[in-house]
Length: 434
Image: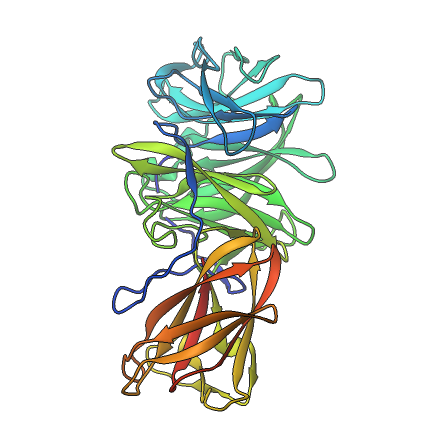
């Protein structure tokens, strides 16, 4: 899970992550951002729960070839337990020093399979190897004297991730490292057998890019498959996490309209959120802190089988909600998607949208607006039928779109937010939940 940016495909606009406005916004926040759970270098995490204990693995660092940590709960406390593969990668084909992006999967027979990326001695590229152990803490012993996947003509292979479909079929999702040799990179799906230590059939291309696309993590939801991936340069805050969806493993894949997690969507609380690993209700990710990548965890929810990460902004267009005694104004210059809710001018005027909260609790409601009057305007905020105060709109001028915010409390799952007529007049472009 190392380098790189997005594939270009069709667009999905159901739930979209946005970025903060720079000028004139009122900052009142109740957002809960991802928390650091391992406060040292622990990049490209792979995390799972087994028999009540959580285990996490990272790219090599001063702790060893495959650092491993454990915790009684996803939020910790986490304890570094040493090197899960103390003997290093397979001496038959690999050398130490670049052992990246481990993936550990528990097997039905009680053993564990580690799939790792390592430094190919003969070519200097990166290739994928496999190792096994009887304990999640290791020691993992490499299997075989040759890599499991090593397409040198495509730049080598990195970032293996185990995926088991609902029908029990086991696969690896991985990337050919085209970025290393100036060719396209593709996320591939390959069926495996023998606890993931052998390959069964050919490779199926999922997503391709001339830029950076890496760190895949594939999840099957009730109605669709969700393929998470990282993009942007991993060396700084431009790294990000996005996803694509498909009704089947063979595609077609539709990339989300905006990335799921960016530095901006977290209001700079995480620098370069990438290398992410998703469980049913948590996402583990790394972010830069003082020159190293620390391990974070955030709450995860699923809105009609689309991911929502707590603390990362999700935008809902106001004009797509239910409007009472007000109108949709199209052709709004500079507005998000060119339309806004307007003429919210009467005692019975309101705009109501539905939003999804991964957990019950406090959130920040951001509202994109323009106020062309001469005085601060306001709207009442009604959440799930209950009054939760008001949101204020300083003067901006018409079609000068800014943001303001208010703290709100939400239930887990779907919630309604209604903006009602308050003081003076304003137009509403969008809502963002954080």
